[in-house]
Length: 114
Image (cartoon, rainbow, N blue to C red; front, side, top):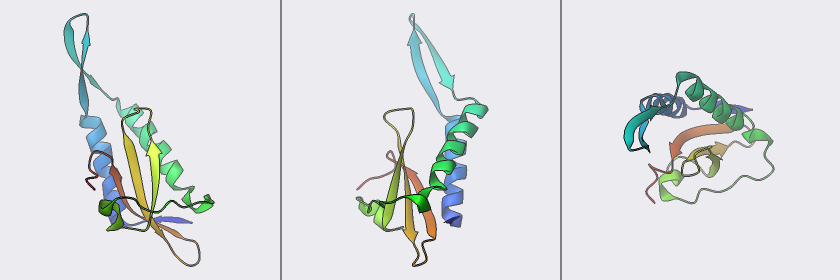
């Protein structure tokens, strides 16, 4: 079973808002324009992320955290790689003795310092 702490649920909301507001300048034929993610794309992206998180209790191997920023929140980390090759989402969690996964923090490689 996988449970989500309040902080992790808040992180998902912030990620949703950030993806909706995210834009990138593209340069096509010398014309600059901003590209935005559609609401449907953001929903699909977060649905895929949540689906991956819901499978954490089925993993055979649980990777230990590598960054001090992550160690503040839990002992294990799952790295979700999006279709954007530069973006990684880190799901930091702990595991109880009876195998319940407590997702405590969800963050990106852009916010991870050390």
